[in-house]
Length: 221
Image: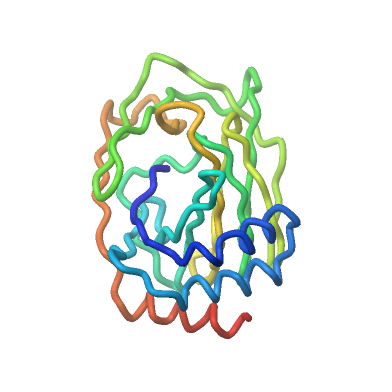
């Protein structure tokens, strides 16, 4: 899904964070993240709720134009939009590190006779995004299903459809890195009964939740 917020991070920290992701070293990634969050962030915008129920805080970019962001599913609190389409593929490749909690990631492949539905194309960004139904129909089935805990990395290519879920009563935080876009927008798998256009407005997250997230990450270092 499109990015929601922007933050100016301390660029002196980014090489260490990039190297930690390259090496899949969870300890070094969390340490670099802690330093980044402690650095001044002029122009930082509010964290926003994502239509799929978690909130997102974009951090900074590295010299290879890869972007880093935090995703958080607060314990027992979700803010999903109505009529969300959970199976989707991004316009970019992504890598994600589970910092705390558990997340189930399911990856889908093309399969005649599998789950079938129209593809929706994502447009917009920031606090407003739109999904528009296309003429294309996809048939997909699960090819990989993993429950991932703290310290685990996983990757999703720009060609792959996937779905990430956290139990409703659970708590989870992930640190995500995305590569530059390879196509204009993301896609989501809809149902034939879904409306032709779905509009999502993202709302700000309460300061107390963001503060709790920062404190929690600080304790992980």
